Image (cartoon, rainbow, N blue to C red; front, side, top):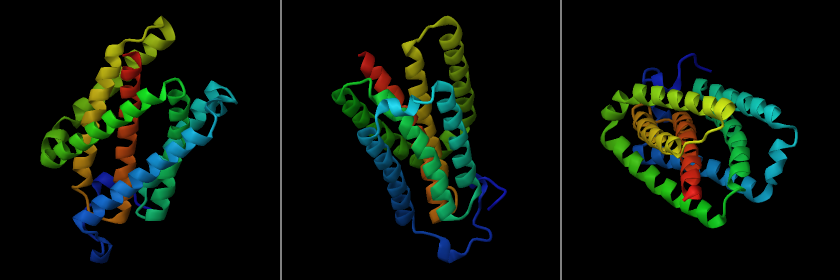
Length: 222
């Protein structure tokens, strides 16, 4: 285990035998991402949507937050690929339950269209992240502040005023587009090891899933 975050790691002290070629590193990130998406697809196909809420909403929310937090701490602080992969799955599983409950409210056609749009946007943002990493690094602080602002507005509106503005979905989708470019750009700035590939894929996975859920809501209203 390491005290530093994955994004602060440097090549100092890393055995050259642990380094992957750029192509192998990107393939590793892609395989880890596809594993997470595949697990989510299996969960949607085989787990009843109501199963996630059988113990109530608040127990589900608490369990979701605890599992995700534990997973993020595991993969971001470990330099062991096996431990990082376990942490990644601790994020994938609760995300899958959330996806399962949300997707159940939409037609298969809308879901498929949202998947296609999300995949296309993700590829574009990854390309931009590779081309302009410095730009995404500069806007990272603005992305964080914007996301926190949107979350606060949505929570206040949901719990106290019972309003849901479609513009918020567009705003969050735009924010996570920026995060995909940012996380992909910084993934290529750290040492290209298998563990870092898993850690980077975990961050990008959460960006893509959040983008997908917002795109799904936008298209569902349309």
